[in-house]
Image (cartoon, rainbow over all chains, first blue to last red; front, side):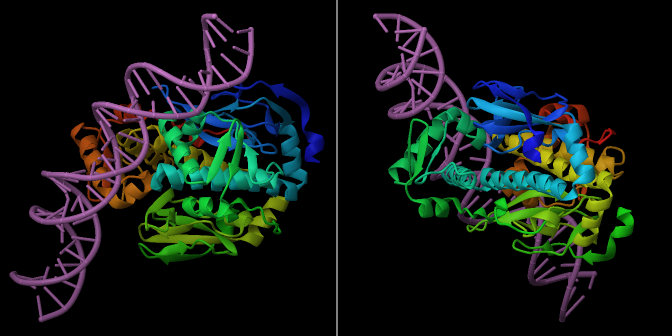
Length: 218
Length: 218
DNA sequence: CGCGGGGTTGATCGGTCTCAAAGGAAGTGG
DNA sequence: CCACTTCCTTTGAGACCGATCAACCCCGCG
């Protein structure tokens, strides 16, 4: 039903905003291909990316009920996105409560991811934090079949990674080198390979259960 | 209807856990009085508080759909809490879609708060971050009538505040002193007074619209 | 061939942490 | 009513992590 509801797939070029802070979109956007991210800009020009969206994720499911966007969203790579009108979502919420609960669940999982980011930013070193993010991306991409042989596409610049981690681009560079020399990852071009998943997860104190990828009655 | 659904109000002593990581509660907890917080513990003993719950907030609405808690929650002050069984919530979700949307909205607002925390932790100085949190608490408490004459109860220790901000207790102390000497706040005992709200909000780059306290059709 | 974006490197600065100790304030038992 | 305890706040000193600034390199591309 959701697939039938997503209409007008369209392309968004790399670096282009999908929506802006203050927008009141009449529909929700689904990411079909590519990577996107939510972010907020500060007066001093700094940027914080607060979420990374992978294929299959909603970009702004919150706009259905929140109405006014409190953040922007950007295509990190070229993306194809679809939209589901708020009217359709309302129809689902009225007549398909089980599906509505699953949509609700996706926002709960987004919240769980946010909290993990908070923990990593607040109480972990830059190295652990970076390792953490890579573990998370690994598992989320694995869930949608985008990991092959412990490798996945990581088409972010180090500066963008820094904006997600709350670090400077220079420091990200040094952290990545450390992960490389420790033999935990390789990252050439857009392809990141996890060379030692167990060690990486241990360094990041990573446990994927919060993503709710297991099947349960809801 | 929600008021009718919340049953068995009970007291929780200060410092006592309301739920633990790994729990699978059969009901959701509502905070009726007092302050509570969600947190995660790390292997090295550090703690990160990822949310502060104020009277009227759900403590773990996510347990309705997520089932297994990925964090603990603690009473920061003596609390009285009520519970709403998952069965009741399911009944609401099946037969009262409008109410279900409003519950969904509360999780979206929680997510918005989380993202703001991320921005503050990632890209703001300790001073700005602290100012930010105080602004947020001010507005949220104001919305439930717990602010009088620019004052509200802040019954946290500086160490707890640090766990929410991702700072050490020592540094929190120095930041608070700075906010005091700048004439922005006073904080004696459990009462915090915002002496210059405009300046504090400006320092924190704070805009309350993300809390969705305005009335809109949902 | 020149240009531009990203990656890499070095040097220095500064914000925040850590460790350690001293100073209140509130409660407890004698 | 006082000594004692405990928890929290405050202060100081030093170390360290990560930011900043400024080059330089590398590679793809027009």
